[in-house]
Image (cartoon, rainbow, N blue to C red; front, side):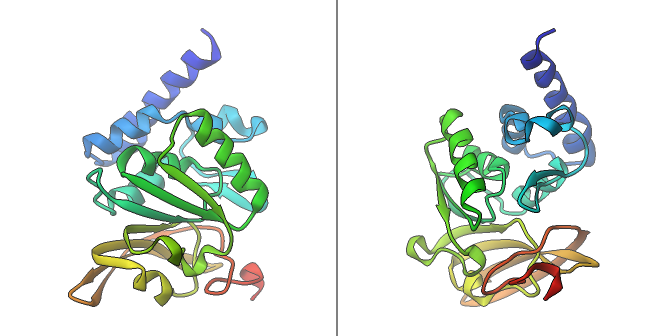
Length: 221
């Protein structure tokens, strides 16, 4: 069996056991998870673990999230295919690729130019032309393209930035981990009639969001 066939089997097993096996039933999301070759977003030295049930380092102190967490955060956005989405923290580009299969337009912003370029190359190789990769401090969002139907943040903030909430359109959703070094909770926010409705969901573990509205120096702040 060649590598691509082996990865395809591992990807199917990942979806069956780690995603559908944990009661994620959205057919479009499951198909996106089956379609995106996660191993291409993982550094070569960790590629043999690409479909394992956990996060992996990608360099620069960042990680590619556990597949189930990628699925859960995406599910909470309730995407139908017509949305404009902002992702804060491109990292490897894997989460952006999943979003690109499920939304009309995706903007993803990464402060590490090297990671951003690597993600841009992989996303381009996969032909995901509806995803734009930006370099900069995404902790305050990307106002130039606002408002967004959905915003997803892939690093932990000390508090939910008001700047991100303000870039949601009416009915839009924000999913973000909030907390510090000892752990965080996943929060979902929705803009309704000019107000913001918050749900605090499950405990999670993410790297720190860096930037003006994050942890400027990491967990040492």
